[in-house]
Length: 93
Image (cartoon, rainbow, N blue to C red; front, side, top):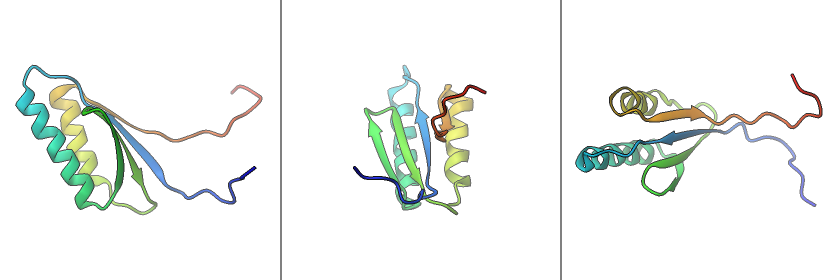
């Protein structure tokens, strides 16, 4: 059995882009997001072309990428969220 010695402090930012009748616009958005992730030196995992999970190390300036994602929310109805994990508990809050 392997146990976690300490947490890494990394976060995960998840994004879901909405399908679009304008395939060119969606393609440009995907390309901009991929470029921003690469330029920031972040790791990511794509599931298809519209869902991405981004590994965010502590201290990373996420403002440029978050601004890009927020534009997608405002213009195309995309979704993004921080995927913070809560420890399992036997009680409900």
